[in-house]
Length: 83
Image (cartoon, rainbow, N blue to C red):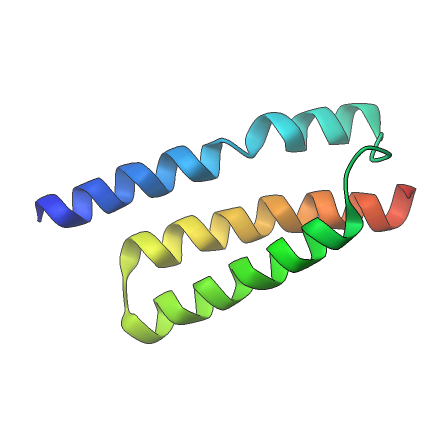
């Protein structure tokens, strides 16, 4: 139980860390300083972590990577749209 709580807190913190970037990018529509290659690779990696979590049935992995995929995917989509 303690291990899962640590995992959930870590997942929450690392996922919430993306919110300021997503909010800033949505508000300004500026993606000039964001690396397309980095966000493409990162989003693909997060997708694979999500699949891994689903295969293991690991709640912290599933929850954090599902939300992080949504946030990173939003930034990637804005980068593709606005350059």
